[in-house]
Length: 408
Image 1 (cartoon, rainbow, N blue to C red):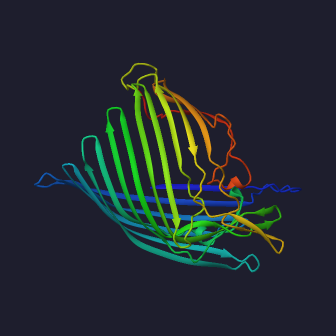
Image 2 (cartoon, rainbow, N blue to C red):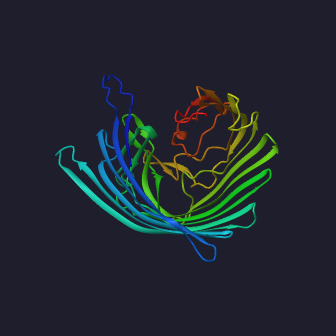
């Protein structure tokens, strides 16, 4: 069981005002509970082994807002029942699962003139399933394939947003007619681990019906503080397919090459075009050198000393809606987005870290630097790109000591 309280206060500069109140105040309290039962393993006559679990998960949330309106006060409840069963024999492992989910949402609206409070209630339910298999082709090579369904009910922001989102510098409108998202996901994973080489390759194809996203509106919203980009929640039939690859290769016993690449292709079948705010292709490549071994039995006070350097390349997102603008009756009209995707960029980073024994406790010390060449760039996924560059050179020192652990 868990409880979380999230209080958000977003401010704006108010000239000639002594008010210290935030423009936006949201207080969200969340309670969650999970109960899982695992049955005893069952051995079969042919050498197979059955294992599995079943359980319940629940969530309840309550939101309180003050000052300007972005989302209404609301209360929601969710409950899920699931069961997973695995069968392993020889080089094969097969797993299947079923899950039932129920979601209930009630939003409260207050008329600022009459002070009359009304509410809107919606509920959804769905059954999902998954089936996967893993085959140990060789001691070094493993193949895993999965097929599953998933869903997501629209949340209160998707449905009822209607206000200026200060932290995003945007005006957001909900869509009360949204339906739940339904997805069919397929995935193929290949793992290879032999001697100095380790490869993890994942190929996926996800088809999402009623995919919910924030669509840029044609006309910005004008307020006293100026013109703000406006967005409305929309949904379409979309396909996401791509490749994630991680390669580690030991060039020397202590020197390792690490490469991570992510390629993603998304398409809007409803409008026969591309979607906005889809992560562009990227590759992150670097070298890591370990000076001191990581032997837990070592009597050294300093252990795990390493240094790492990497180069991150993020491509321009060319698969995005075409962007254009025009004047119509003195009003600036946009199509596709408020600005085209920014150019590709390359960032250089480095890190050095170690563990130091302090009073019997391991203290991790990590010094990290990002964008060391102070490159000017804008991130396609950051809505601040319409106004400003990303932060420049950044140096961070992190200290971490798990007090519950003590070296014997």
